[in-house]
Structure formats: C-alpha cells, structure tokens
Amino acid sequence: MNLFGKKSYFSLDNPEDKRKNDKRRQQSEPSIPDGMWIKCNTCKMIIYKKEVTEYKLCPNCGAHFRMSPQERIAVTCDQGSFEEFDREMLPANPMGYPDYEGIIRKAQDKSGIQEGVVTGRCRIEGNAAVIAIMDSHFMMGSMGSVVGEKVTRAVERATREKLPIIIFTTSGGARMQEGIISLMQMAKVSEALGRHDEAGLLYVTVLTDPTTGGVTASFAMLGDIILSEPKALIGFAGQRVIQGTIHQKLPEGFQRAEFQLEHGFVDRIVHREELREELGRILRLHSLSGDCKEEGEWK
Image (cartoon, rainbow, N blue to C red; front, top):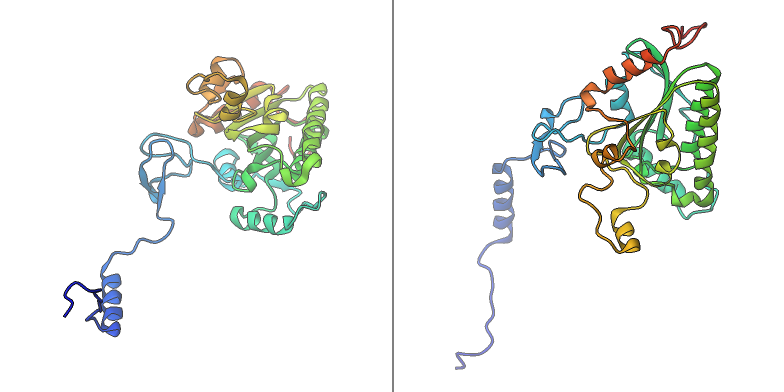
C-alpha cells in the first residue's frame, strides 16, 4: 500500500443540513439595513445616519457633506417660497455620444432631478432673489448645455425682474459628452451675468465642494460677493495635474477654501448653519429701498 500517494477529501456534512445551518446562522446574526450608516471622508468615522441633521454636517468633526438641491432649498429659502423654473428641460445628444440617453437616465434616477442644476425664485429672510443650485449627484455637477441654458435663463430673469441672483456652485467641470457645446456655456452664462451687472444688480456665488473646471473658470468666480463653505475644493485643474505640469510640490491645503480666502479669491467662508442668515444680511444691505423689486408680486 502506498501511504504517501495522492490524498482525496470529502465532506461528511449533508448538503441539506449545511443549507439549514447557514440559514439558522443568518437568522441569528443582526441585520443592518442599507443606508443606516455613512462614512465621513474627513475624519473617517462611521456615523449613524439619524445623527446627521438637516444641514448635513458630520457630528464628529463638523465636515460639510454634499447636499441635494432639495436639501439646500429647505435650509436656505423661506418655507414655501421657492418657485422652480424650467423644470422639464432635458438635454439632447449634440455630439452623438454613445448611450448618452442611458447615462442621463441613470443620473436622473440617482439624483431625483431632470438635470444638473435647479433654478427658481424664492425669499431668503423675506428678501426676494433668484437662485440656481448645482447638484454633485448628477454626473458630478458637470456643466452641459441644459445646465448652461437654465443658469442663463435664471440670470436673465433676475435682470428683467430687477432681482439679485445667488448661484450655489458644485461641479467637476464641463461635460465631456457634449464637447464644445458644453464649453460654450462658459461664455453664455458669463455674458448674461455681464448684463446683470450692467443693470446694477447683485450677484452672489456660494462655492461648495467641489467647484472645479469650467465652472470655476467662468461664472463661479464672477460674483460681486464670493462665499464658500468650509474646506470646499476650489480650483481649475486637479492638484496632480498641476504638479505634473510645473514639477513643483504644491502647498498643503492648496485649492481648499481656506487657502483661497487667504489669497483673495474668496470673500468669506460661512458655516452652513449660518449661511441663510448671512445671505439674508447681504440681500438687505444691497437692496436699494428695503425691497428687491419696486413693484409687482415680489415687492
């Protein structure tokens, strides 16, 4: 007999018994529903979701989580005052990008909105204003033709109605699926803001994490007053791209809101819980007669 030959193994467990044991073990283990916990990317803590308030702040370190336009409206606008513009505007596929329609549908399902920005008219502490809120959940807030068109229309409406405009920016940059059509939005929005400025009206930008690419290179940095949330990433190209181009190590915190404030690119960093009050104060200070409009419904 060859005692050192190839060995064979077999299980003494009955497959049916194994299945029952696995089922009993699963039933005895505590189940954690999906979405109950979130991780803070700043302090790396795992947080019970119910501990996060309506302002979407980390209870451990105070980091500002990204917000949807609906959440932003709830904490910024006076209750029931928001009226949305151009809700059903949808993009075409000007460059014939493969399955662009499918990409858009997936983004709509994820974000719950039709496109990457929500625009409308509201009151903030009683002051009338037009607002535009970009959404990082929709293709990382990329600026395509519809985003540019909706923001432009919002600016033009603010100009016609003699209202200030506030734009909450968040973006990974121009939308590559729309090519040059996307890049054209930079000039289009900027031109509309130029006419708004010529009319002597107020434009406030609120930079949120992240604000980069073509949005930073155009309307995000054109505000009469530029506010930012704490630690927001603000820049054009990414840090690794810049370092690879200039072959120099960049300072710690380069492109964060605090660095931008120190170097004069941002006027003030405002904690999210204080932002509504700050915007209300700015609107009151820049109102010619205590009202944002001399006549009509929004007096």
